[in-house]
Image: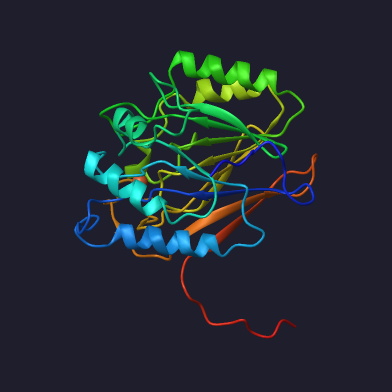
Length: 278
Ligand SMILES: [Fe+2]
């Protein structure tokens, strides 16, 4: 299906849906030996398919697979066949750049070498997808070329709202076992941002929880996982753990050209209601 993402549909609302950390496993294999992350991803996709008006674009912000194997990317493509809207993907620390590239030959915006960063227009909004992954390692880092490319991209789109999507969030979470795998050069990223005023918000994944903060004056928002959520443990010697808290995705909606987006957290599941609204 070809969709011209530069043309906003009805009114001038732009909606980008975000799924994150879906950790697809080979057929029949459980994630962390405990949960069916493939089924949980499908449940999120089914929920997203019911959103009206439909999002212009769906972005999956990394950890598409759990081990970056060909088997997992094959399964991922199979599961993505159920998604009813155009989508883009970026890698996380559990992905493999080369296998990801090979699995998505139809995503012609993916660079053929190096980090899988790209940019495209979605309605009035410029989406800048930054590959923060470091092959073979779990922390994040942006190389010099990526930072220079971002600087140029932001300068060339002065006056247009930009949303940056990246796997590793550019801040310390306060959860010690997450922060050792954080974005190592968040300061260099912040320096680039400080030269521009057109970044509406930064969207990230990686932390398997909903968090909000700012980088300078720019809001930074993380999206929960569609599988497991990482425990909120902030003690210095906290032990890593995950829980089956409600999975979720996000909808980021720009309702006017000069309006900041409103970001909505949407839980996946069946909940009692609708109840009378008074
Ligand atoms: Fe993850």
